[in-house]
Image 1: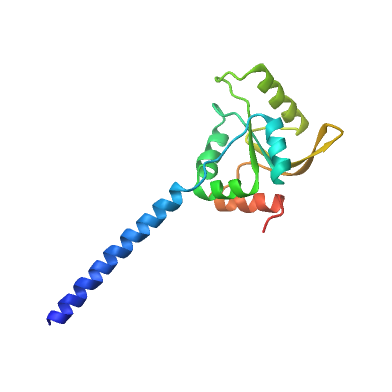
Image 2: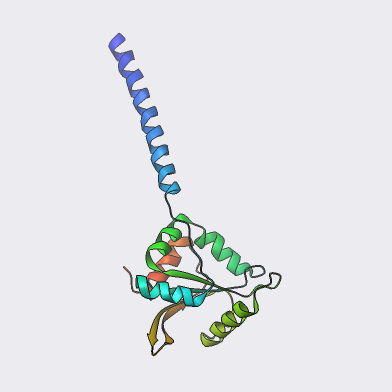
Length: 167
């Protein structure tokens, strides 16, 4: 009888220890996740893309007014699965068209030219491209585009992987 009580007590202690370890490891995993770095200077992003051999991820957004853009960020971009995927696979570039926030004239010009180049008609629009520099001039190899996709990060990432040919 005493042996049985001791065994039950040991099982409870082991369960508590296991729970504590699982919580500690999961918190450690989240703490070590690298935050997303969104670039706004396309030239710097191009250089990084060439150095890392990762495609550019052009996110055309209306950050302070576009409901679908905010929804895409909330449902996909702010999730840990997306952060892990993005840090590993792409160079993120935010090309913003806000109504209330004032951007520099240079940034407005850059974003407008890229929106025209890619035929952006609505927001959010994401283009995956690889830059090619020839004779000091940048050409973008268009891999494909994607907007909002229902189904959270798993569905969105699956579509993006098809575009950039990841398995």
